[in-house]
Length: 80
Image (spheres, rainbow, N blue to C red):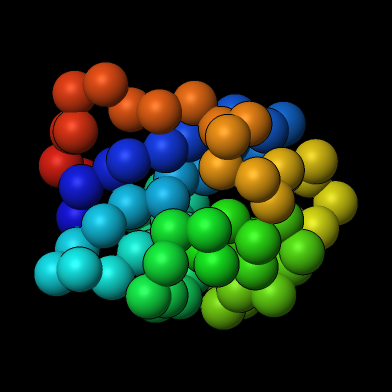
């Protein structure tokens, strides 16, 4: 996956990544869903509506913005 955006929280960094034309909210290398648009991935992650994280973290409580304009953009396109 190629990381496009990131947001740092008290629990660690969350990413919006792209693979094969799909967008994935991700945490510690774990995809939390698959979306046609990056904004959908951010909205669901911010609202706590993604696939569950193995640690049981409720992403809705972490202050993750639903607007990608607020996220940091990955400059190098690092693959994970």
